[in-house]
Length: 256
Image (cartoon, rainbow, N blue to C red; front, top):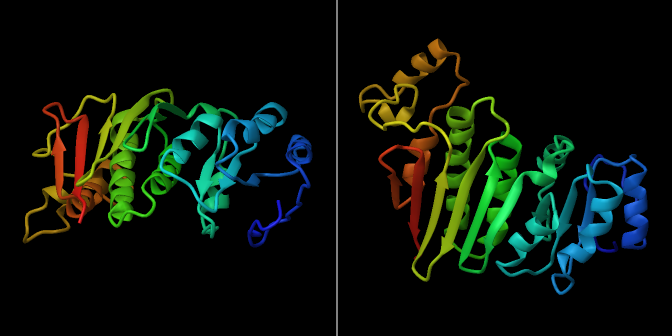
């Protein structure tokens, strides 16, 4: 629609209506659809023609204004991503290019109120990256939002790497609670859990005089470079609490 930004280095075709846009998407020529959304219109009404005509094409919604409830509403309606007015295109279109035919089943919204967002999320890297975008929009305007988004991304990636493994069919449970004085995010994975005392591959286990001990362990185990996720999450949270089994974590950030 008019007023939409134009992503760089892309062929862009503008449609005069939702129906025309759905027909263009059905042609198979395009890798993604970008829609301007006024949340006064139910997201399902806007997105349903695309779900019918081209279910594999990722649909990105952009809104000039929104409330916390609009992010889960976009998820329920089948949006691939929900974007701010000035979309940071770096990485967004690369992510959309990774979309596969089954992406519409990546999220299940269990609660979508202003105070409580509850989701089941496919335990794969691409949905975890998209979770960061939806959470960023759900928490938009809060001073603590970006730190909490980073915490959730790091913890979700840990679930994918260490809990879900090659089982692309498993899910993680995710809750975000917006309290008057705090933000709480909970992640629970279906894995066997772990103990923070036995993580030689993670930076959180390093002694103060040997901050890179985990690097050699990761190389020996064939793990990708990294291992700083829990350390970063602990730094950006006011409290980071693990269950006894170790497959459930609660991150708390107090609102200033």
